[in-house]
Length: 254
Image 1 (tube, one colour):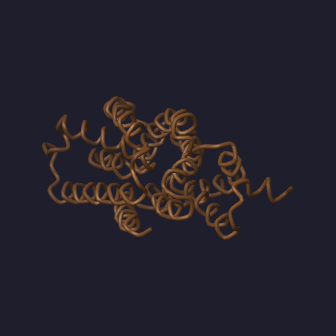
Image 2 (cartoon, helix red, strand yellow):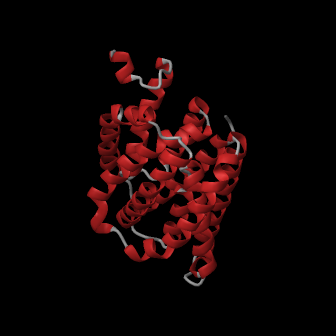
């Protein structure tokens, strides 16, 4: 009886424990250690398969988004959210109909390559600097919105893409976190009906497991919020880029 409550997906306890660690990491990521949760994508994909892992991870991300919005909402810049959101929705719609036909391997490789390209653009932007760069162009926000919407629907992997856009604006640390938190929360909530009714990747059992690990995620959120206070702006930017690169590399390995 207790086992059916604590482990509704009936996995082995090693898988159950690793999933709990992923919940902790998701909380830490959403409360300030941006991009850190990307390591959850290859881990959960390995344990549960691509489609199921996406449905399992989404509620964890939403729980973390809620915490981050509560704490950082006053720092958010809505103009950046409004600029990307319409194109992100189009990307989500495209991915909704294509996602069911994308294999685990195709999903991982495609997202990994996209992330590495984004990271290269970030580094290029930092090296060249200047306000009149291509990041100020309309096509840049359109392409990132579309690709980010597609990536977030296929594998909850839009973090590096949207972070790229916000980092290109050179936002202060707390503004960067707060703006991203509201953007992700709205977008992730809109994805729930698709996962439940169309992809069927979110089930009563998977939601039950999400709530089992909610206290662990909250602990992770407080840990992340505490740590980020001590990270200088420049070091924080470097940290995000390093995590993005590591996440992309991990996606090449199942």
